[in-house]
Length: 144
Picture 1 (tube, rainbow, N blue to C red):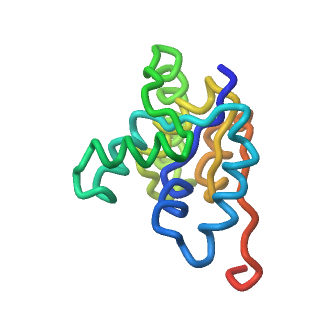
Picture 2: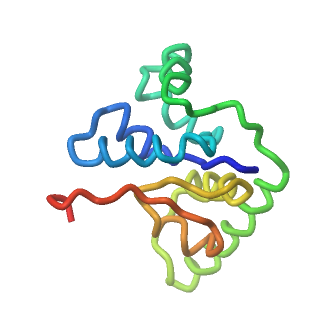
């Protein structure tokens, strides 16, 4: 599918007007908007706390930002996430990986079947999804 999946952290950057990352994240999303932006069902769940559980307000924000939220989870998404989770568990058992939230592997599995992922945390995904295209907002100079 020809849409970019937006990671939770990037949506929060824009929503919260993060002083360091808000503008770079917003600019990158604006640049990618013509290609299509979507969040995974996992990000939809993760964002709910930022809206105090007000789903109508959450949808309003996403609609205004041009980020779709109704993209269905597919069997192919599950397969991608299963493969990544297995790789993670094998590495963890060999003490070659630190704790990794399953949510990131689910988001990565979803993104692997779309154009790619917009994230500030490329290392959280590149090891488990080596072929995943990643777009990363530029890091502000003061934060590097």
